[in-house]
Image (cartoon, rainbow, N blue to C red; front, side):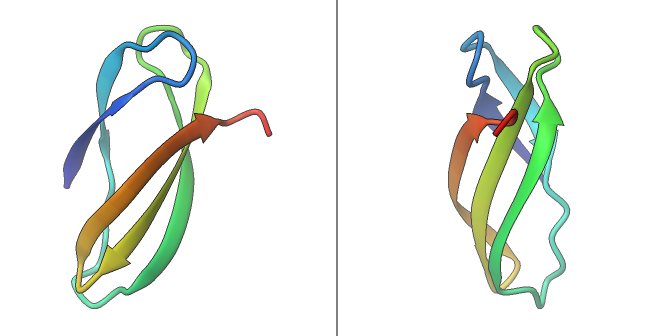
Length: 62
């Protein structure tokens, strides 16, 4: 499932593929490099019944 996010560093928008199982519920975080500036973005999100909710983008260098 693709989601558009805004890079924490350069503020450009790009898409990430958050693969979530239909039966997964809980919190997850992943690191994605920006396709424009190549800096790491930490993406935290909650999943309920296979649906991604509450995406937060932060500094992936932490």
